[in-house]
Length: 60
Image 1 (tube, rainbow, N blue to C red):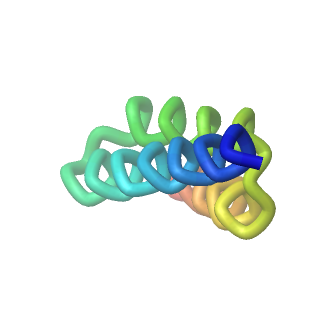
Image 2: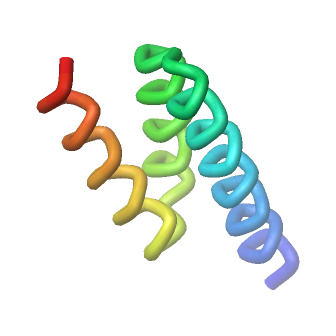
């Protein structure tokens, strides 16, 4: 159980980092951070990360 909580916290932290990178215009680093969220597999966070990757891909 604590492992699942740890995975969720890690995914949330990667999501926070990805948003900061995206806000600073570092698209490649943001996509890499979003991919880490997807790899963690945390439901809502992973869905959001996939949507952000798709949106960034359309912009660039």
